[in-house]
Image (cartoon, rainbow, N blue to C red):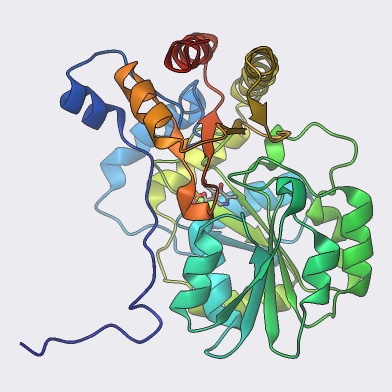
Length: 364
Ligand SMILES: Cc1ncc(COP(=O)(O)O)c(C=O)c1O
């Protein structure tokens, strides 16, 4: 047989492996009430206001969505205090990241990202035939000085997840400002702020505040995390009009669906849901990290809704034993983190179930 072959970049691309669905685990092991704390989702569910809006919009599903997301664009740009022309939407923020890669890179170009940075960066880089330039992450944190030192004539995009997934760590304001001051204007600094709303730290550099510094910054955010709308798929990017208009040429015409648009408009107003989510997360993070400390399990400092723990050994036996306790966490070996697991902060009950599960599994 001589079937069509993928292009040379795609042949050895390692596909993204999502967290295990609860239903799959329950089916496989024959248990009930399993908890999934593996995909950094909102444990309180979707914004109730978004659910209502989506229900109402279902009867119009025969229509194509507004490809330009006019009402959402108006709403979000006024909330953020930016011009609507500086906004682009995507089928999740992954789509926005992908559009950026396809807009600004070609085969032979280079992209810089951290060794434990979000896994979608190597995928989109490789898919366009660009070269991945990897920067070490001491203490699990992006090292912007090292990233800067790796810039060449061929560098097109520098990806920085802040906070980063799967490490949960944060780049601080001073280091970011040092980097931004130095970085050439014609390199896209992609600031992936998927967990922006969770960060509660004076030292956090909100990349939106640096949009007018004359550098090529793309701020990327999502409705998948704090708004609880991961299944609807909606993310967005903010940059100069020039950057956004170039990206608009590349995006698919209907890459934000109609339900996601109305859901997002409603979710933006759902202050109660956002506040409650932040509160539950902050209490949960404090509880989980305190218990981990008591158990002598090391973890990376987290500024977000998950924590990276170091088992100090092959994590798969612990992962599998936790599954049998009805707790789904996330192995992160694909990131080169060979002794670690990533645990999403859940509701108080879910966090309890994880802590008692890990105590039992580790015999502590
Ligand atoms: C750092 C980071 N960026 C982007 C995404 C993509 O999110 P979505 O495509 O659901 O907006 C995630 C999701 O886990 C993430 O952790």
